[in-house]
Every structure is written in C-alpha cells, then in structure tokens.
Amino acid sequence: MTDSFITYLICALVIAVPLLFYIQSLKKKEARAREAAKKWNLDSTGPRAQHPHIDTAKCIGCGTCTEVCPEGDVLAVFGGKAVIVNGHKCIGHSLCAEACPVGAITMVLAHPSMSADMPFLTPEYETSVRNLFIVGELGGLALIKNAVNQGRQCVDTIAQRLKATGSGKSAPGVYDVLIVGAGPGGISASLRAIENQLDYVTVEQDEIGGTVAKYPRQKLVLTSPVEFPLYGKFKKTELSKENLLTFWHTVLRRADFKARTGEKVEDIKQDADGIFTVVTSKNRYRAHAVVLAIGKSGTPRKLGVKGEELPKVMYRLIEAEAYTNKRILVVGGGDSAVEAAMGLAHQTGNQVTLSYRKEAFGRIKERNAQRMRECMRAGKVRVLFNSMPVEFKPESVVLDVHGQVQEIPNDYVWIFAGGTPPNEFLQKIGVQLGMRDLTQEASNEAKQASLSRQQLAEAAALSAPAN
Image 1 (cartoon, helix red, strand yellow):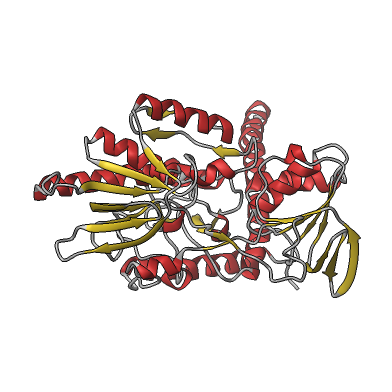
Image 2: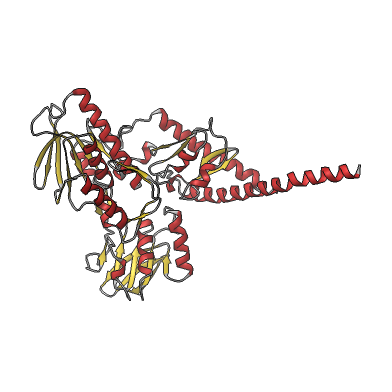
C-alpha cells in the first residue's frame, strides 16, 4: 500500500511540476500582453497599414504566431485565441501567417478609415486606373521583401493580360510596361519583365537602388529570405545596405538590365485605347502598362521651426562616420531617427541628444527599442521625451521640454519627421486615394478589433485582484 502511494505521489509530482511551470509561463505571457494592451489603448488609432487578420474559427490558440514576430507584442493569446494587441507595430514580416499551423492568419491592409491618404489598390496591386500598378511602401506594405514580391507578381499579371489580349508588341513604339523607380520593387519588376521577355523600360530620378541607396551605411535592410527574379531564392536572413546593393548590381549586370537614371516622371496620361503616355524630365514614352515603384517618403517633411534653413539642419544621414566630436540633435521618434541617433552616438566624441514629442517610443522595431534602451543606460544618447524644437541657432538649439524652454549647445541637427507622400502627383494622374469600399473583409476587421478589445478587457478583469 505504501509503495503504491509513493508511486502515485511520484507520478503526480511528475505531472504537476511541469504543469505548474507551464501555467506560470502562461500567466507571465498574459501579464506582458496586458501591459502591451494598455499601450494599445493609449494609441487608439489602431493598425496604420498591413497587419494580421485572425480567423477565430480556425485559431487553436497555440501561440506560435506570438513567438515568431520580430516586432514583439503585436499579437497575444487570450481566452484560447490569438488577438491583436499592437497592430500599429506590424510592418508586414508575415512570419505569423507563415508559422500558423492551421492557416488562421492572413495579412491585410488597414481599415479604410486609416488609409485616407493611401491609393486604392486591387489584390493585384492595380490602382483605380486600369493597368497602372503600385508596388512597395506607397501601396501600404513596408519591407523590402514585400516590394520585391509585389514587383514580381504585378509584372506576371501584366504579362498574362498582354498574352490574353494579344496587345503586346502590336503597336510600334509602345513598350509592354514602363517601370518608374529602380528601388526594390522596381528592380524586381524589371527583372521579371526580362524573364517574361517583355519590352520594358525603367526610369529612375536618382540612382539605382532608390531609397535603399540613401540609407545610412551598414543599415540592416533585409531580415528574411526572398525570391529575386533571374536569381531564385535568396536565403540570407540578414543583409546590410552595402551587401544588398552589391548583390543587386551583380544580378543586374548578368541580366543586362538597363535603367534610365536622372529622369523624373512629370505626368502620366492614358488615351482612349488604354495606352499610357509617360512624360519625364528628359523623354516621352508610350506603354501598355505602368508600374509605380516610387516609394512613399517623397519630400522630407519640415517642422516649420525658426532657423530650419541653416546649413547645419539636415534630413538624411548617409555616413555617421563622417561626424566626430560634435554636439548633435536628432529630432523624431521613428526607426530612422533612433537608428541615426545610435549610429552618431557610436562615433568618437559625439554628444547626441534625441528629441521626441511623445512620452515614449511607440512605433519602432523591437530590436531598435532594445538597442536604444542600452544606449540610454550607457549614457551614449540623451533622450528628451515630450519635447520639440523651438528654434535652431548657429551654435545652439532651443527646445521646449515638458513646457520648459532649454537651450543646448549644438553643431548639427537631423530631422526625421517623415516625408510628404506624392499624393498630389497620384491625384493628378487619376489615382483614387482613400476610396476603398467597406467590404465584408473590412467589416470583419472592425469586428475583430472589437473582439480583441473585449477579450483583453475580460482577461484583465479576471486577473485583477478581488476587493
């Protein structure tokens, strides 16, 4: 009897101890999720662009999606179902959708009320103008990987349409497709056009690489494998700006890629036969289809602060190594501002201050948030939350910090306040903005957001201590 009791006791302990640890880990995860939910409730705007949509009928609450997301607490599990807790932090990795064992997650764009300044796009990335496509960040999806995939896919759509209608190469002097921009999306679209044996032309107002070429040195730009046309699966999971540009140039030389740089597109018009006339600063082209891969940043947004015209005030940082032993102010709270501040702080003798108008960083990548916390603890970067510039002077800057005016010595200022999207140009050429219909998918998204909040509130109530 005693032996049996000891055996049962040992078995119970073997089962109970791991179960206890498991329950404790679940409680910790829910506590972290509740903390994330508090931040989400403060940021009531919700997802700004792409984000995961969860089919609660399929979701089994395994939590795999919460573990693979590089941005941290975008998703959490409550009541046995995955819910969105920080949709605005999603930048479209899509790893949650890929990892879900039951296919309960798909990536969707923001609710129409959140995309008033975004172009209307079909699932094929086509605008309201027939055969005019938009790929990359301008269409609402961040990440180089997404731009590459979209460029490839929309050219496939164009090739299929040309084949179906027999219109390809039927009109002399008319390209099958004209691609605007030679960044990630434009390069991918161009290479796919070569693969599909389309008669194409690519124009770029700056240099090959687009916005990527203007990133700071050694910036990490690619964080997951992607398939490049004329190359295949590119399996590296981390790639710097320099390495990506080198890879592109290698593939482009092999493909005999030709882009016409230094040409800014000024106008696009479509005639009654559906053929586009594209006017650039140097030429005039005709094409059956047009792919816009021009990015979203446009012209850097200025603050309108006195002294902003001083030569020491800049809006783009290429080489942090060129600045040493300087007193520097970085303005902004996004990834670009944080990365610039950290890059400058690691140069010899620099004193770096970062000014951000909000009380905390709420929209930066998780890895940047961790690195910035380390820089702040080490005293490399001084961060002034709830602050904004009042005036820039030749040897100082004046800041409003928590309602108090401070003047600090300064040699250089970098402002990262985003860019002005090319919305006027899009409207000029006939592209509709913010005109998405409230489809069933959008309705489902609104219901899911409401459900997420309800689940979070119920979980918080259940876990709160009794009075």
